[in-house]
Image (tube, rainbow, N blue to C red):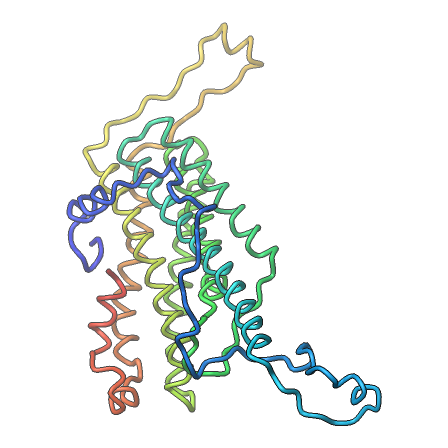
Length: 337
């Protein structure tokens, strides 16, 4: 049980072809530019706040007399508003890319840690876990406002806010904490509580899918509400798939005929010098494997249940209007990939 896309060996082979180096940030952020040309959309204009638009020349006397007047928008003024809207959208897209890049590098560090298993890989995963927290703190502190959602077709969607609304931050923060502790094998209680936390996150992800689809099926306007529920389902399945990929890598590591691991003994003289520091008992590979299996079992159970939930996804209205011609199961498999 890996994904709907193949075996672990196939997924790892595809992963290796990407040549990801989690310790390196290869994106030149200072050289990023916006190549979108919104002027090609003749009938699109940003939502104008008329209270912030300068009146035409010669209207000062009208303002003084508090008389009503119609503001004549000049092309330059509209263009300025368009540029401001595009600039804000670009900054949001840039921050979204930073979060997506951080997620890619973080997940990659987990894979490297449990396939190579060196101190350098551990340090990289630890650093990227801290970087992940810092990314979200920085982005949230800017308090970006979402783009207007008054229109069905939005040329500047607030994709950043969709990511911030989904549990990416907490799930992968807790996953990083669990995997780092699991690799060390020293803090047994922390490892067990970390596994329980992962199981809880998995259950919550699929519960969110079920509740979102249930709410959507009872909504009045299925076409208008489709994007929100689709974003929710897509994000939850993506998170679950990444957890599944990482946990199968862990499973492969600890299921390879684990041998009993010796306790790190402390010599008598060293013990006296270190204030009788007790020996560190590492968790056995067998026990670590069992915790990994617990998370995988939760994923398997929820994926089976999710199949039935997606079959209840009300797509009849969209199908009649030529919007969707696929069975929900086919969509589920694509999302899982």
